[in-house]
Image (tube, rainbow, N blue to C red):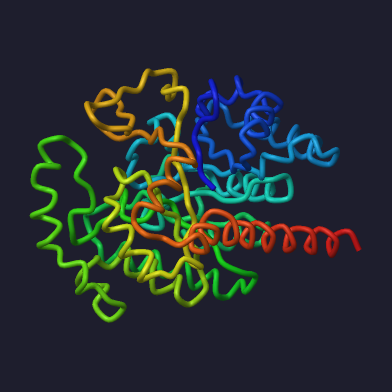
Length: 354
């Protein structure tokens, strides 16, 4: 559901994307993927050209392995590994234009429910969106799923409240579930979720034991996990959202992931790789640390992963997920989300043409 680069392509450099070459790579692997792009403001017009090409080609079945597109940003409260040039505040008009790409293959947009919209009278944004609920309503009306992610950690209560307002919009929409960016990463939470360096891994077993994962339950999510991930899980259990999880074991520890699957249910989870195969982002080389598959920017910030689908499935087997659970997370649930969204877009377009 979520990858940032296939083959030699860096999905920040939109002008260099070759959909035919990407399709050939995916076909050779027998994989289907949602290509998740970053959108520098300078590449805004080019994004629509890519969507036009995809939409035209899809009508002739030229891209059967490219399921569509996601956007990470541009409205992000916390950059995380997102290139700085991919973070900016669209105007109200631009949000409507981006939402209109739902019929051309834009499946979801990741944005921060707790982002600052600069709606005061001194704002330098030309006619900004009035609220994040307006953004969610605008996207959903055109069949683009609002995917929450990249929260600040300054005020978890306010962030969780903003997140819940998005899920209230999804509930009112009534056309199926939305999705998330990866759970636990780039959000406030109440526990250590990963041990990434060699020094950290020396303490991993002791610190993991202190977490007492067996004590986590649906009754104490707020206290054990934190308000934001708890809000995601509670709404997933209501059928309003499918939660994305990276199974590389480094974005989130595999023991934590195993417990999360138990709390959520496999039917409410999607696998995402968050991978960049070229090891380049925004024209900059990414690097690995010793004994890690994560890709870091110069500032020591995790930019992406490098583990593909097959490696992540191996990790699922390692933590004891059944073949049925793995099939649900990697195939059945994402297909259901994509099919439901496609049906909505098709019916809406037919209604508009009548």
